[in-house]
Image (tube, rainbow, N blue to C red; front, side, top):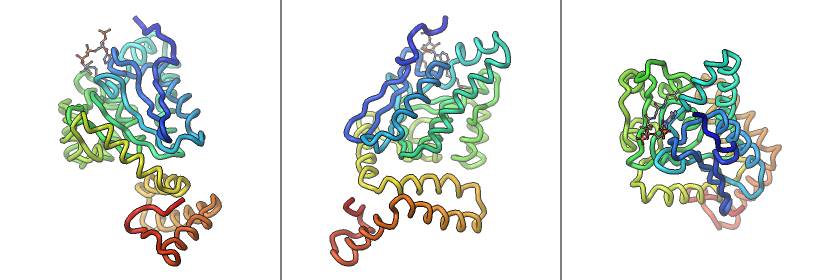
Length: 275
Ligand code: ACO
C-alpha cells in the first residue's frame, strides 16, 4: 500500500551553525524516493538555497540507508497503472530536484551512511563532494530486476568511473563497499561509520571559511568545463571570473591580496583569507 505519511515528513532538515543537514526520512522504506519525497526535496532545497544562515548543504539519510533508489511501488508501479502522463510527472519531479542540486548556489556534500542504489546516483552526482561510511553499499541494481540504469544512473557511473569498471558495475548487479566506491572515484573518501559525521563536519568547516561567491563560481565551472574543449573552457573561465567580479569579486580579492602582500597575515597556499 502507498505510504500514508504526509509529504512534509519525508525529508528532515536541521540547520546548525551554517550547515543544513538534509536527510531522506523514510528509514523503514530504506529512504527510497517516492513522488512525495521528490516534491518535498525540491521544496526544501529551494527554501534553503538563499538563506543567510546556510553556507553548506549536507545530504544524508535516516537509518540504515542513504537511499534505496526509486520507490518501486509509488514511483513506478502506481504511475504505470495510471498511464504515461503519470510516469512523466514522476520523472520530472525526481530529475527536477537532482538538477537543482547539480547547479545549487551553495556547496553540497553527500554523506552516504548506508545503501545507495540506482536512482540515488542522481543526487549522489548532484552533490559536489561525497563521503561514505565503510559499510555503505553502492549498486546499480537495475539489471537485477530487468531494467536499465535510467534517470541518469548510467551516465553517473560512466562519468565517475573508468569505462571497464562502469560497464562491470552496470552489467553485474554487484554492490561496491564504501572503500571500493572510494577507490573507483564514486566518493571522495570512505570512513568508519563512527568517524563519518565528524569528517563531514570538518569539510563543512573548511568550506564555510571560503568566499561563498567564489565557491559557487568554482563548483559551477568544474561541472561546465568537463564537457568543453580546452579552448572553450579557457574562454568560459575568463568570463566566469569576470562575472564573479560583479558579485563583489574585486573587493574580496583586493582584500585577500592585501592580507597576503601588505599585512602578511595569511598565505593563500596555507588556507583561506580572513573574510
Ligand atoms: N522501493 C520500494 N520499497 C522499498 C525499496 C524500493 N526501492 N527499497 C526498500 N523498500 C521497502 C521494502 O519493500 C520494505 O517494505 P515493507 O517493510 O513494507 O516490507 C522496506 O523498505 C524495508 O526493506 P527490506 O528489504 O526489508 O530491508 P533490508 O534492510 O533487508 O534490505 C535493501 C535493504 C537491500 C536496500 C532492499 O530493501 C532492496 O534491495 N531494496 C531495493 C533496492 C533497489 O534495487 N532499488 C531500486 C534501484 S533501481 C532504481 O532506482 C530505478
